[in-house]
Image 1 (cartoon, rainbow, N blue to C red):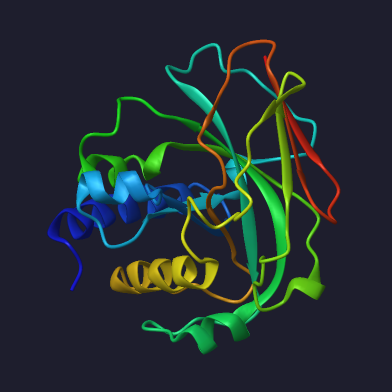
Image 2 (image 1 turned 60 degrees about the vertical axis):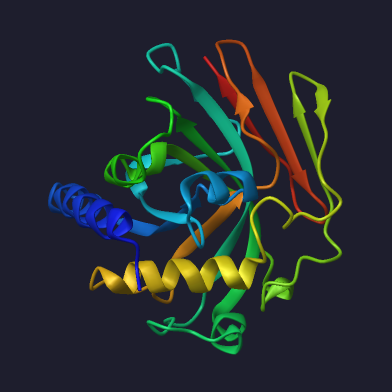
Length: 229
């Protein structure tokens, strides 16, 4: 059963999404947020929150983003899942693994303001999503196994510590995808073939300000870079 706070927030979020699509935006997929263990405990959640992504927030590698009007801009290096088959409303791990056609690196940009204190309001605001960079996908990672992957993240050339287990802050990728699929299905939508899902930050959010560059390299993939202007 879905938490009442989540249900109310999702209704408002889907109204916002519908308005964007009516204005001509194209849906590209979904995002996980609030998935770190401490955050789940703080808000008494059984899994991450879900947000939506459209082509209006899609950025290219090396993009410069003006964050001067943002209140608390951050970059979040993540692992993206490319969905190759529609996911059932209540999927098993086998369903999820079979649906994952490829993995890729991603960087999400968010403006985490006001500070997250209300689950419904966070959902209604699309969980702070402002932009996303999607890296080159690798079909050899079909199924979503990341156990042997490593990553490197820097902020203006200074290394940021990355956990050896890239799922330690997000939860297991198949669990994240299954949970998001259930939340999306509760709204009457579905996670469908062709969608991309960014599964949560593999390191704590990296603060941004004008002049900051964030570099992210997932082992075996071309690196991604974003600049804050």
